[in-house]
Image (cartoon, rainbow, N blue to C red; front, side):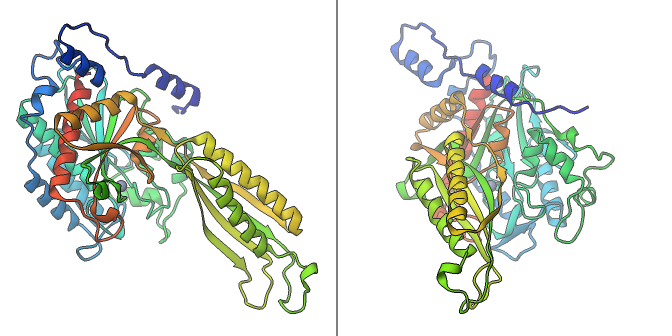
Length: 474
Ligand SMILES: [Zn+2]
C-alpha cells in the first residue's frame, strides 16, 4: 500500500494550520500585549508543571560540554582535522550515528530508526496523544568541510532537551529530535534524501532501488552495510503521515555573513528559497574556424552566450532581490580553438522564495532559448527542467514563538531568508516549519574554516529550547 503525496490535501493542511490568534480579554495591558504578541496563552492553565515563560530565566545551556561533543563528533571523519569528511553509510558515518544515539539515550529519549537511517529521539509529553513537536538536522559532511553545518542542529537539540529537563520543564506535546539521513548529496547525488523520503517522495523511493554510487555500490547495499533497509525493499515505510508533527524547527548556522556583519545573535527564517535546475543543449553545424565565413555559420556557442545574458536579464527583470539565476555550466563541443562549436551545453540554476515568480523566469528563459535558436539557425535540442523543488514559508505561529523566545532571552534578532536549502524545506511539506539561524565566522561553510562561537551556539540552543517549550504547550 502506498501513501500518495497529494498536493491538494497538502494545501488544505496548510490552510487548516493557520495560527489561531487567541483574543483573550485581560485587564492587565502588558499581559494582553504579550498574548497578542506570542499568539497563544503564556500561562497554560492545563499545564500542571511549568509554563514556558517561567523557564526562560532558569534555562542553562552547558556550552562547554556541547563544544566538547562538537569536537568529538568531528573526529569521526575520513579527512584529517580540521577538515571533516563524513559520507553516508561509511564507517565514520555509522560511528557518528552511534555517538548521537548514545547521547539521545543519556538524555532519556526513546530512540528509533527508519529503513534509511533517519534517527528519532522522543521525549514523551504529558499528553502523548497530541501530535509531537520536532527539531533536528544532519551530521553528514561533504569532503573537506567543517564541523558545525548540521551538527549544531543535532547536538544543539539534544542539549536543548537536556536544558529543558534541568529547568524542570515538562512538555505537553512530545518533543522529538530527528537526525536526517544524507542532507548532502555527496554519495548518491540527492540532497536531503532522508527528509525528502519522510515527506513522501514516491518517485525517489522507487529510484533509490536502482541507484548506485561512484563505486557502483547500490543504495540498498550501502544502506544494508550500515545496518539499514534490512528486509525491506519498500522504502515507502519511511514516509510520514502529513499530520505527524504539529511543528518542526531546525537550528542551523547561517552559512552567510549577514548576522556576524550586523552583530545580531539570532536569525528568524521566514522563507527558504528553492532552486530549479534547467539543462539546455544547442546544436549547430560546426566547421573549420578559418574555412566557414561568418554569414554561413550557425554557432552553438554564440547561442549559449546569448542565452547566458538572457538569464541574467530575466532574473534582474523579476523585480525582486530574492530572484537569482546562474549559468554554472557552459560546455562547448568539440572544444578546440580552431573549431566552431557544434554543440553547447548549459546548466542553469534559478532560485527564489516565490515559486510562481521563479517559474515565470524559467518560462522567459525558455522563450529566449527558442528565439535565439531561430535567429542563429541552431537547434534547441534540449530544454529540460531537471529539478524544481518548491520554496517553503515558515509558519506564522512558529515565527512568533521563535521571536518571543529571542525577546525573552534578550537576544538581538532579525528576519531572514535562507538561501541555502535544508531538511526544513522538505519537512515543510508535512509539517508547519520554522528555522533559527546563528552567526558563523565570515559566513564560511562547507570548508574547514567553518566556525560558530560557543556563545552564539549557546544563544541558538536557548532560543531553540524555549521555542520548543512554547510549541509543546500550544
Ligand atoms: Zn546543513
